[in-house]
Amino acid sequence: MAFENLSERLGKAFKNITGKGKLTEKNMNDMLREVRMSLLEADVNYGVVKDFISRIKEKAMGQEVLTSLNPGQMVVKIVHDEIVALLGTEDAPVNYKKSGITTIMMVGLQGTGKTTASAKIANLMKKKQGRNPLLVACDVIRPAAIDQLKTLGESIGVEVFSLGVETKALETAKQAMVYAKENGYDTVLFDTAGRLHIDDELMQELSDIKAYVQPDDILLTVDAMTGQDIVNVASSFHEQLEVSGLVLTKLDGDSRGGGILSVRAITNVPVKFVGLGEKIEDLDVFHPDRMADRILGMGDIMSLVEKAQEKMDMEATTKSTNRMMSGEFTLTDMLVQYEQIEKMGSLGGMMKLLPGMGQLAGQIDEAKADNKIKKSKAIIQSMTPEERENPNILRASRKNRIAKGSGVSVADVNRCLNEFEKMKQVMKQFSSLAKGGKMPNLGG
Ligand code: GDP
Image (cartoon, rainbow, N blue to C red; front, side, top):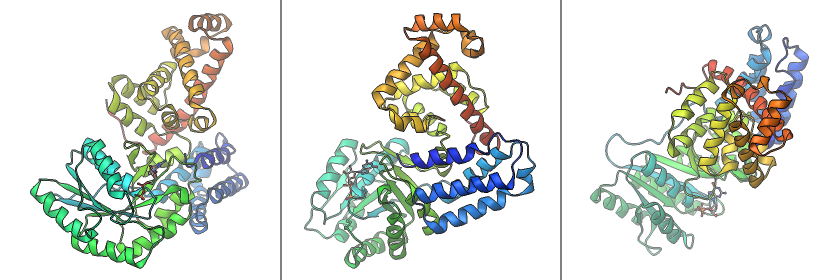
């Protein structure tokens, strides 16, 4: 997953300032130097880093921070907010028309994941946004692109309109619009051709389709694995087509993440979706604040809650999450969170959403982690309600009883308790951000 190293390095940079009652100019400068190095090493554009650091410096050196009760945490919040600002501050939803057919042109270089993203987005629109989408195969250049789209369309139950490779892309687009009107579709997604490099012929074809369709959104797919080159590609496409949104693909890959942090700042085009894997459902609507939480290793509680909402009864989860957001966190909450993870399947993905567990997720293999969660669950289940609420009462004899009851060693019990303490710490930081107005209330 992108950002793993960055999260780790930022975490280290903050360690020296959080918890300090007073901040000096020196430890602030040391921290800023660390943050700058972390961003440059993550391959963030130099100019972007320079502006970022100077904005943080200006805010962090203010009297309000230096004299506050917990200056370290205020600085972490400033960095958090500036990362959100880099990523776009506001969510950027699809520009749906109030009435009539919404049209979306998907553009991007070959191999960036455009065809996959077209199907993923159609699927999300259909399942989560109540739309009735039609996919249109306008990539008549890449061999097999049409078949690929048809197969994907079939798998998600979305119709694919195609006139084959003999018909020009513009003609296909024109007839698709007629077809969409006649058949009551409310959203049309055009999967256009890509090339390995930007060339005039491609841009002309795309401009022609754009002129005819007048799309409500032009979404450019960019591959997170290509690093800073994202910025060049996005700038070129944007110059010629006025792109209205980005789809960042392959965020699950092992990239340094710098391109992602630079592209919005430089092009000013908002990110609308992120691709997180090869499967159809591996696509999320992009939320800058949640991404910032992930980058800072604070997990992504909101996405976790949403995923949970899709899969199961929400009562216990909402209760537990609200308690966590208010800074309370007990072993019972930890148990609820672990139970969710198990119900939801992909452990690696879920662990990254839990505060404090992001870095851990990269270091251990899934089978081991799975086993560990099973053990932790058994351990917590062997505790009395009183022990779960207040683990401080756990002395050797109680730990022995719990270890026996859950079929693990006392060392395992201690490990589980350590993990709990760690999560609780991160939860506290997270909740102070939430109280600062960062997080919406979950209700419930
Ligand atoms: P196109 O040429 O731009 O239409 O690219 P495709 O949609 O054919 O995708 C190229 C390759 O990237 C395929 O093997 C996809 O499965 C893969 N791919 C697309 N999106 C993602 C993603 O978010 N994560 C990962 N890991 N692979 C992806």
